Length: 87
Image (cartoon, rainbow, N blue to C red; front, side, top):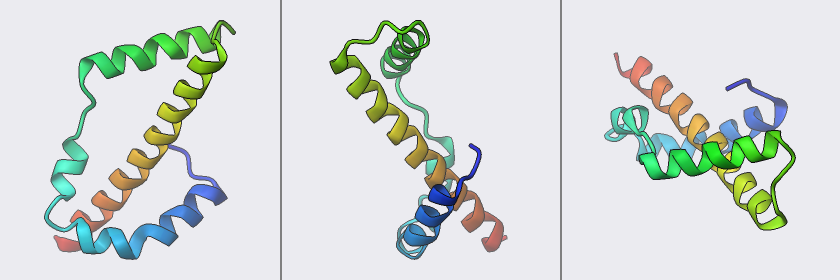
């Protein structure tokens, strides 16, 4: 995931909390994969978005998945940092 000023700021803002929660869970965060049904739904919505065929409800759903994906990417980046600093 490419970083932006917004993601960098969010990252810095949540880092202290994540350092409390993550040490025992960093590996699990890095190994997390969404279930196949969810991945299929996101791929379906992504395709419809590319084609300009999303309904308003689908667009809202897709935007929620995009935000969740950004959040998970930030969690993974923090988990990697924690594992690197622990070794």
